Length: 387
Image (tube, rainbow, N blue to C red; front, side, top):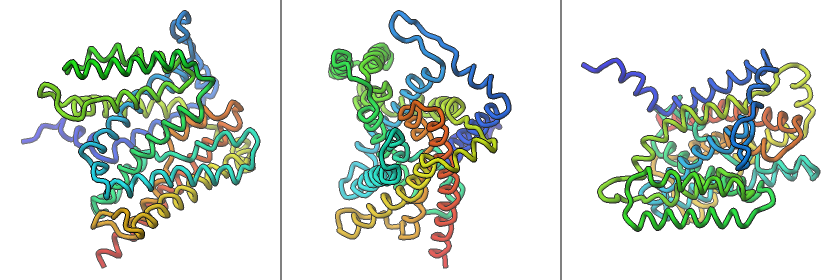
């Protein structure tokens, strides 16, 4: 007879759980800010950390720079797994999600810049480039009993590549003046990791202080510290080391922490936006808000669907056997769910608080429409198949 604890464990391992956790944290942030705005702002502005080494910053910065490094480390591990033994291992299968992710990143950025037409607001070109895997898979889980497994596999591959591209955008497009000495120190730390691997060190703990040192050097280099997470993840051995599957062990331990701690805390810190009449009225008249909204919904759809159509029509790649044209439409709409990374880029792109808030409202509004539209499109696609 199964024990009762298996029920919450089964739910936590479901595709819908991350989306629910992220949605709950987002709702909490909005309620907190709109009901007790002063305490919300004051709390996340508390400064902490050793000032002697340049790490005295507020709690919001600690979440964005440190906790999110763990999030991107997990993204990097997932990418490494996909590249070595997953869908991205086979060139013919990999080219569809890779090209779709690239198209789904470039087209929204170009559309955003076209709509904004220069000025300080143009700095937000990276906001609509990323797809949120937690929300995307959560929406898909609502209809997972009917939707073919190939749709989930393709969506996960696109979202993984998409987030990896987002790290490059953050690291290069939003880097401050680069300190090449610090960057060299970070590179030296990565070489040390490689040397430790070749020396046969399979225990994870010796790598932790080296990884922290790489993060510290990257943080001071002017390149966003989260970049260190992806680089270190890609250096993780995919095969067994002394009989130990390090990559699998790390994913097993860190994925729940990233999903149910890091991402919800990030949402609690960054998803707080004012929803009073004045704030919504200002957003409705903001070109930043409408450009983000249109770029996520229209740009993502055109970029993903168009890239898939061109790739498959040219014969360069092929879709899974159970994925049809209707599923591609639903998949491309799902890509408009650009939450976590989009909010992070909004904080990096703008210094003006009004622009940050307008961009965040645009992200949330687009994600809401994308969730509804993709659910409808995928449901209709599945009904046509059954008929």
